[in-house]
Length: 222
Image 1 (spheres, rainbow, N blue to C red):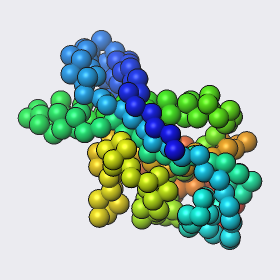
Image 2: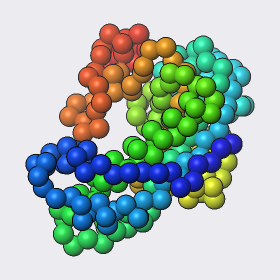
Image 3: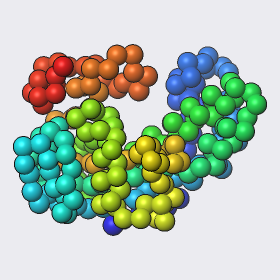
């Protein structure tokens, strides 16, 4: 088990303006100064090994995950990295206390940028420390094939995530704090994005276009 504390997250005003679709001349410095000290980025991960595969399940360290897509992606993998990362609760609480709804939205977006930066830091750490090479990731709930209920299974393989980095699951399997991410990093020769096989339309988080041919390859095409 590995834990990263005090992950450095440097907020880029230009990146945040781009996310918010603001003019580059608009001043974000005050909000960034407010947000920066409230970001407490941490991550928990485990070096796990694939020890069994069936048609639509894969087993890591004796813990079984049910997903045809995950099983396909881990078809040749031996070593993978389950993880949870978070920026903590403080920025979320600050945003929730704002009476100005626009400021609340801005701080929420800054939180999204920050948790992405924290996850990328973790990814680079895994590459550097374990010579992991090229990797992709999958996240419970990103596809109907790997539903959000699998969060419970993922958390079970990581032990007491709440005690380690302060992230817990609700009864509906959502993470608290909200600005947290979870998943499994795995080695791959070809980059994989869940968006490519997800047919959901008008998704604000979409990172790649839906590819029905690829979805058919994974046998999840609608």
